[in-house]
Length: 69
Image (cartoon, rainbow, N blue to C red; front, side, top):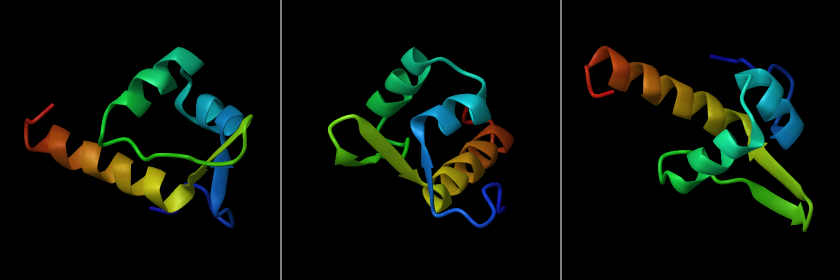
């Protein structure tokens, strides 16, 4: 899929901008076991592996196409 070319990780601000959602939405998604878990190199920094976000999006498309969501 390569949505985040040349990047290994994406930070919280980039996640918000990419999806066009609020931080509350991301918090709700994080409660869902399917949404990728971030790594936290510092207490205020969350990073998501780009490949995991891309995989999650692909899974959501498959579930949608199968009528599961």
